Every structure is written in structure tokens, then in C-alpha cells.
Image (cartoon, rainbow, N blue to C red; front, side, top):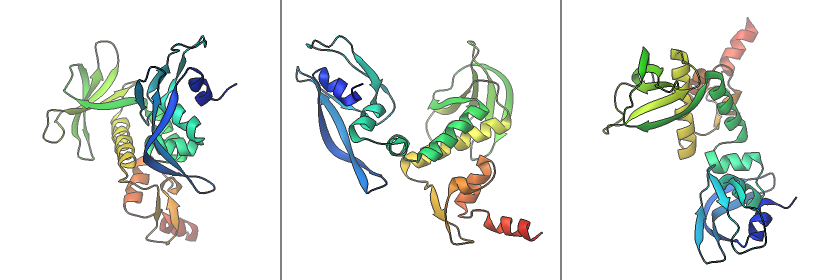
Length: 238
């Protein structure tokens, strides 16, 4: 089967590289990923976002009988021959190991997604007091049956609130873990959180997932630049 890029080129599209987006580490050196655009036969140029959004390349003036439906991320992955780690770095600014862990945590608590926006009405069933600067959160269901947790107070100076969507009615612990996942994803994407760090206790470079324990503990220890080695030593001595 032809590569994705070859299929798209077979429809009459030509790829154009722009400014550098990221230097993605590889086993041997790095791959410089640039902003991609496609130019159709009629001269129209469309910029391809470096994310996971869907994208369709329709057949235009060719003998090819099918459109190509894919994602923007898949185009970058095929064009630059990125492995799973490289694609995760491009899309999320974190490794595949971290991305897999966060996705598993989402599945564990039933987190579907989150967004900021104007408050929405729903049938509240409970109220939780959440840490991490969130405060009170109303938890319940929309009229269509979806589960939601919405902050009672607005975020910052705007009128927006935070809404977390779940596949089931979340517990307080679920909501708190969802807030942590949101923080981590945002911090990784903005480069405010690094996966690897040097432990202030043992001096070794560790990955934040090397810290044993639930996600809240991992984050707390990572921010303190500690891997938990001193706890292991105490446990071993006893």
C-alpha cells in the first residue's frame, strides 16, 4: 500500500514546508519538523495544523477515484517519518510514555474531555470542594444524559468556567485527578513542565513516571524535584 503522502500527491497536491515548528529527538540526531501546507492543482494552498484534527484531501481533476481522509498529525508523521514518540512530542510536547499514561488515567476516571466557556445549565446532583485553586464544583448530568463537573466560580477575570465531561458520575477524587490531568497536559504543551528532572535527594536524573504512586503524588513529588528515593531507603532499612 502506498504511503499516505504518496496517496495525497497522487490526487494532485504538492507539499510546501514553512517555518520550523520543532526539532524532534531521534535515536540518531533530530528531525526538524516544519509547518506543512498543501497546494492543490488549482493553486489553492491550505495550512496543515500540527494537531490531531481530521483532514480530507478530495480528488480534484484526477483519475483517482477516492478521497483521502486522515488527520493532520498522520500527515506530519508520514511526511517526516516520525515514530510514536516523535508524533507525541509534536502533538502534545511530551513523550509517548507520558501520553499513554495520561490517556490511561483518563480512561480510569471516565474523563472524556474538558473545556472553558460560559456556564451551562444541567441537573446538579452533588457539590465538591476541589483543591488546586479550583474551589467548589457542581457535579451532575445534562438533559441528554452526559455527566459534567463545572466550577462554581469563574476562571481569572473573565466569565468563563471550567467544565469537565465524564462517561459516568465522577467522585470527588475523579474530579481532582481530572484537574491534575488538565494541568499536566497544559503545562507539557506550553513547555512549563519537563518530564525528566534531577532528584534533589539522590542526584540522579529521573522521569516523572518513575515516581511510584497515584498521579497526584507523582505531580507533588515532581514539583518538589524528589523521586521518592529517600522513602525507598527508609522502607529498605526497616
